[in-house]
Length: 116
Length: 114
Image (cartoon, rainbow over all chains, first blue to last red; front, side):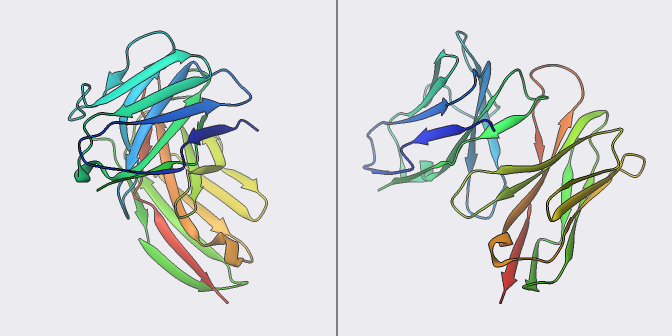
């Protein structure tokens, strides 16, 4: 089956620093990648949708200058949390799809971010 | 408004027992309905995916049903195991367009006890 990896699996950073999270589709080319955030005991919340080679589409309320998304290739997307604050602490999950949300999305294992 | 609601919010069962989780949705029209299993601290893993024309789909001990008329789905787990302890999420994909977003339910947290 399709495998999506994330790196790192967990990270602790100091307030004000930036953190980059990588999402890779290991055995397929992902036209579209999605970034989600999940707070404890809540469901996944879509942050942004990115298509290879184009700018990401952010959901309402998600600051594009704070959460920088780059989808430079069909197998790699990165999420950079800039000037992180404690309230950014969350579980970040990416998913990859062959084409758009109506097709099967394969989720990564998630990245636990803790900002101190 | 497109919504997906799940019940119960949480459930505790003994190992070896069966259980059924419910999902009601208002998404219309929709392309497909999915059930995911999410272990604590991990990403969701797909269990089943059904189009509106499918009534049931099985994956091992997991059987999902879909009634598109009443907009209800269920996930039945047979002979539960300790490893079934997880959150089970019902997700609906609206019909049409490559950029349609998935609509997530809030999940049912299942605990299987020995």
